[in-house]
Length: 177
Image (cartoon, rainbow, N blue to C red; front, side, top):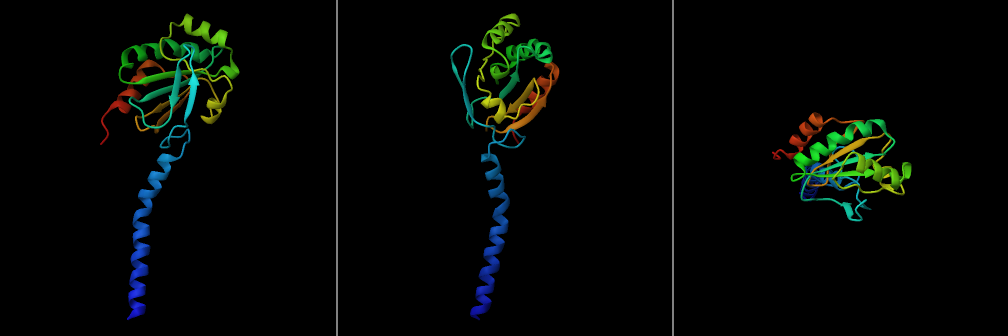
């Protein structure tokens, strides 16, 4: 009788562990910081051209469009007006950070770029290149869409036009099921 009771308890314990595992795995994945869809966006703090501090560190009030760029990048020049249009239209609903990868650029040319394209969204400066390294940016521009839970929902390598970005933003802003 004791052996039967022990066997039942062991089976119950194993069943409970197997049943809880998927929930634990989902929670762990959400805490892991990786620049990949479904994972928490890597945390950082940068100072912008406006000398303000910009942070990505988990949950946030609004979704975030995180765009990595450099002033010498041809596709970045083509994309800049569309980013500004999207910011003007959705700035109340989303944050948009145009992270200048200053380690591959210079503050002076970044400022000239911002002035030339009349960009009004925040421009955090990645002077040391640590943030672009954490986000594994291999090409300019690269854009990440991050939800209010701080989870990466989309990665776009290369230029994104306003209609495509708006479509992605509408999906990001739609209520969660």
